[in-house]
Length: 278
Image (tube, rainbow, N blue to C red; front, side):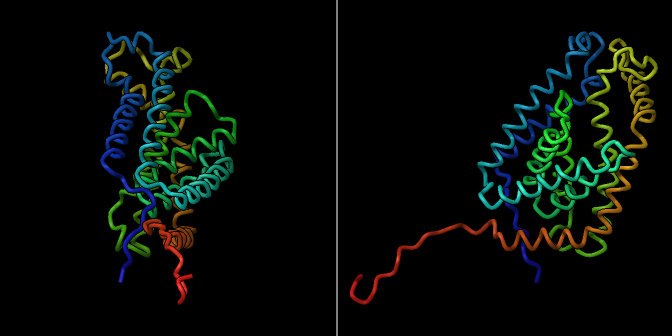
């Protein structure tokens, strides 16, 4: 008999509303160069807009994390969150900057799969924040990284077949998701940094006065020229680690989740009285 999945974070109505809000603002923050018309005030301040959105994303991600925490992030879940976030933060510097070798992504895929989308979003955001502090990578790009990694890990928790799909079929699903999501993550981060280029590379830089098709062509050329190799390396490493280490890591995460019994409420009983009422 298949045991029901235990997830340390339950997404209630408030959590879903907060997550939907931050995701909507995140889509605007990432994609505003394609959403704002050339006459928009955002395009007039194209160098300032990413900073404004970065500050807003910090506040919104904090609101979402707090809301999800109120809906069921207990002490056991906080402990597991700390362990996984520390592990992911420690994995990120391994090979960072070398052909996109980033082993933390496979851990985020497997953690989101086992622990669900709510925990996945919090874990992805916290892990990226911790790794930025560890590597000195704090800057206007950090809120975008936190949100993108939150989406990345949450997406793994939304994959189908969580209660019944096991073995090679599950590994193939997770590997395929990791491959595609690695490119999506890289593309999203390119969108966050692309408006900062200005006139540094006029052929592929964002043109505030250009039409959407023109800027899309520039952005595609920018992705191919600057990050395609890194995104491919990240995707391949994620697939290889998922297929080789995935079975052991999935078993360990599921065993830890069962033993933690996140859904079991802690109760205290009064001491039993003896035969004489003592």
